[in-house]
Image 1 (cartoon, rainbow, N blue to C red):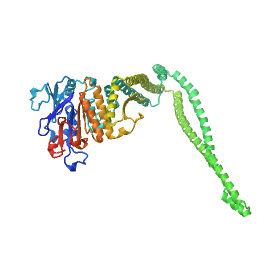
Image 2: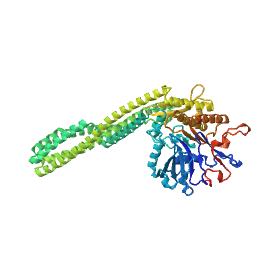
Image 3: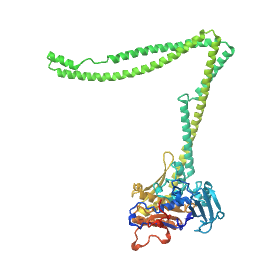
Image 4: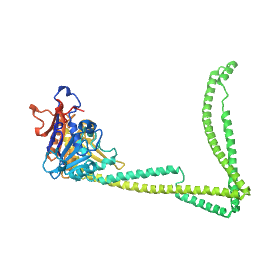
Length: 597
């Protein structure tokens, strides 16, 4: 349940770190005056948390310092000793060169050194990486995390500087909310299964909607009514049967009769109607063009002014101004009417284009039908009917394909309705669960939010609210806010120092609420006192000590300039609490006794 020891096969380069069950301090002393104003000192206090993560079988990342500087660390083998729930220990062996080959050994005593233990001394050796994770998961036995893997929430208890940016969303989580929100809801005491089902249902619904959109695009605006398609297929098949009988009998009299009737009743009538419509449209277009050309105002106020002047009329200026106003008024009316005429001409020309196209098609068809009727060559008629049969069968095949698409679309629509209804029911269940857990003072979430507020209030004398709400999409929104005296959320939590405090308070509150469960019982917080004033540092240290007294292990890192001042050089920490002491006086003061990288 807690890290017990971290060491390597190279004690001179990396001194063993023996953790105590309660408070562990990684203290970096800045002894050189020229380094006191630097933001970073590269001594290794942050690196310790990364090594713990490596020991807990973090995945291989080329950016991780051990692999990024392989020339320096290739010969290193690290060992992480972990205290288990039953008081026994397991040591995890992992080398840098073969990071995917893991070894395990269970033992009863703490602070062992297996750096020289031969292969036969290990319980499991060279275990493949994925199998090793499963094995460590079973050894840790953090049952309260199930059905999730032990690494899922490890970031809440191994907080690096990057993980203080958001209380809930860790950098190791995927960006999709479905990856981390159900897990977070689970450790807060909500029904995570409902939330996982809701995300899964939402994904299925989106997939079905996307498929339906694709099919509609494939149909390209064609018929989406299966009943209409079935009707068209029935007519087409009947027509195929009739033509097939004619072809089989080699008798085209019936077809001649049908073509004659169709030529007279449909084709000729349609051609006549279209010609009449085309004549009417052409006449209207001619009138519009004439109107557009004639609408000009020929009166010139300047010429009229000159005429009045020569005639000796003294009010010529006033008359000119009146005419100009009249012309402007008439011009405005003319421009508006001209716009209507131009628009109407465009509509007429578009309709003429359609009519001409249809007339050309009908004319061609009429010629073909007349040629068929006047032909005495039976083989020519047979050939034409055969061609029509091919076209009909192609139409039938296309309709059948279209019907298949439409049936798939109808099934998808049915699935979409079902999934949408199920998603709505799940959202209602999630809302009911959240409302119940919020209202229940004995719920796990109520305990966590009380512990959370207690920690923040003890440190900065300001209330804090941890809340979970269901948004309009049925997803959970997690919030951690500082409150003013009126209980209204303030913007103070947006500052990095207070954001870090909220993260620490959240981690400790979750750990305390799960003390009775098979759950992690340790927390690593990097740079815990940074940016806090001295009084708040003392308050936070009191909180951490109080929580370690409950049975939680806390590991904190800091530099000596962040220590709260004490009178008469009274030490802030007991020497037994300082598990790693770093300094800037040469390589011996670094976590790794070597040149910085």
